Each structure stands twice: as C-alpha cells, then as structure tokens.
Amino acid sequence: MIRVLLVEKNHDFRQGIVRQLEAMPQFKILEVSNETDLENILSIVPVNVALVGISTATKYYDMKILEKIHLIKPELPVIVMVPEKHTSLSIEAMRCGASDDIFVPFDVTELVDKINRIIGKKKRKKARWREKLEKAMIGITFAEAGFDGYAKDILTEKDSSGKNGSPTPGK
Image: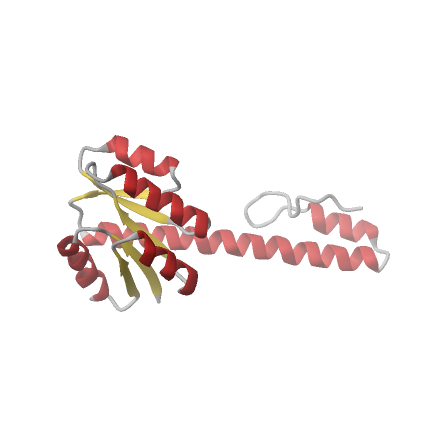
C-alpha cells in the first residue's frame, strides 16, 4: 500500500484526485488543506510520498508548506502540482525540497507513473544502503577476528551500483 499525502487547498480539485487515486487498490490517500493538519499527519502517520498543489495566488504559503514538509520529514519525496506554463513555480518548489513536478491539468496515469518511479528510487536507495551496511558489518567481523586482509577486501570491493562498498577504508 502506497500512502500518499495530498496537500491541496482547492476542495473540488483535491476530491477529484482522491477519487481517481483511491479507485486504484495500491493507494491510500491522506488529505490535508492546511499547515496544522499537515504537521499532525506527518508526525503520526507514515507516508510514502506527498503531492502538494502550488498556485501563483498562494505561492508564498505553498513554499512554506514545502519547507515544513522538508523540515519534518526530509526524506519524504514530494511531487508538486503546478499550473501549466508556470515553470518558475516548479523551479522554486524544487529549491524548497520538491522531488518532481506535474503540470495541471494532468492525466492520472502520468501521476501514478511519477509516484511509482519515486517509490522505486526510494526502495533502490534503501537497498543500496542496506548492502553497504551488511558489507561494513562483515568487514568489521573479519577485522575483529584478525583477518585484516579479508576485511579490507570486503570494505573496498564495489557494490551492485559499481561504487566502492564502504566510505570507511578497511584497516
């Protein structure tokens, strides 16, 4: 189940997105329209991705929302929904911590693709960190057992991404 936090002031637009996404069984939508509800949800409920509506009329408030999300949950990916032909809003949102954007109006399949892509990136990043941690633990075990050569080999071999296994050199 993918938990999506939807932050959008326009009730009708928000409800339209909720209806379309909740028609798909993989999504659970948590909707908020203000900063107080946002803080409450983020502090209590685990969320996989946030969708935030940005408009020219409420630009400063919307950027404050993005900064608040980034402050409370810096690892949470955020997709901003930006009015068509307002690229500058998208750029400013990226500076405030957004991960991706989608221009309104949009097709829900495009939104679902973006959500799935972001969730996939997050899972791959987590798997790479898990692999690095496992290698570090194995290397430390060999080093503690007196097998420094094996420890160094394990800690400096490349991981599945082609990068060195550990940022800490073996001893």
